[in-house]
Image (cartoon, rainbow, N blue to C red; front, side):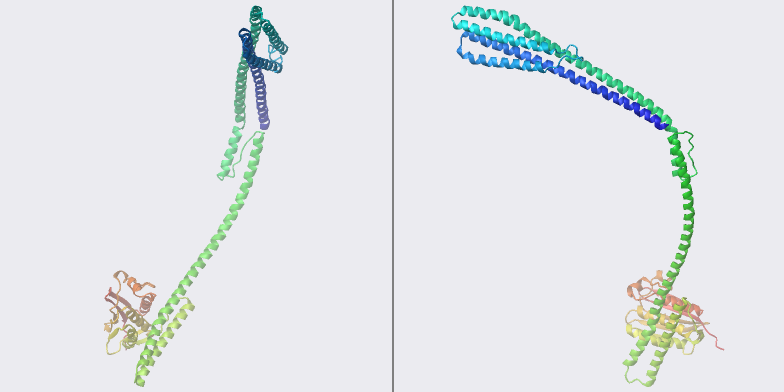
Length: 528
């Protein structure tokens, strides 16, 4: 239905355009025709003017020659005669090509009449040549008075009485034709202009009316379709377009509703699939996070294990090497001295073997729990033997070591190898961070129910802001990092863990660039 109305509007609009085109085409043809008439009239007018001028010039040349009898004027006469007949030929050609009288212009050029006027002018000019020749013969015969009278009579009767009215009438007629053609051309242009304006107004009025009718016809369905697209775009797939008409818009609305239903079904399927996929992704993400955390924990354990190996094996190996080098450098030593050196090397090797077993156990069990073998330990004897090992390590740094300890035993309950490990950690740190030619003071005493051990060095000290963090794993103070780059930050945390397991404590006091003092306290074992 809508297509039918639109087709009617298109056909009528095409009719308007076609009619306007035909009218403009007819008007342009008429303008061209009248313009041609006007041009022909003006050309004929100009030709008559030219003939008139050339004729009078030729007449004057002939009369001058007759009156003056100047033989040199012959050339001028011939020249003017040629120009006169050339002008006549041009007039004759214009008359021949002039349009004939037609129904579009009832009073236009009558070609036979024009040709007849040209013929009269031609005949007059030829006759005038004959009359001038006769006057010339009279003058040559000596009959000058008769010649003058004949010339005067010819001028008065023929030229003034016949030629002048004939040429004036022709010129006036052509002027009137040119003006009439101009008036008709202006009238046609005026008529064409108003025809075009009227046709344009009618076409515009029809366009407005038909556009308003069509707009009112499809405004409501277009708004309904636009609202439907907005609802679908916003996600409301339940929306349906309600059009009761039976035109193309209703057909489009039904297909639109069908598309919305299919989209709703597809969206529900996608929503279900996405929900299932999100659940599976969440499960896999959780599993990956757990695996990632486990990998990080295992990697950290591996790093700590390697750090523990490098730290714990370094001190016993250094002492064993030092003992062997000192024994080999000595001369004239008795068997007892070699025996004591070998005994310390054996003890250190056993210590080293215990470290290796502990580290392997930690690696296999994947835990940070150390194993302890509890027994009664003479702390005085353990400190004394450890100080002897300190001497070996201190020789490498040109550092002296002194010991202040009671003469008798000082019993504690603990793991001898673990306690030796604590002493080695403190002794090695003191040697490594002491200044060359420095001194390390070791003291052991009893304070009530506590066995106290202190180690004082003259090293680089610890900055005040770092004192609370030196027992954290992998932490190293800023000046220690600048002094040596081979530390791991594991010794003091391990020493604190061992002492905590023994029920003891470790404390530190330090002045930067002056030295540090580490103090260890352990419960004294009451011997029955």
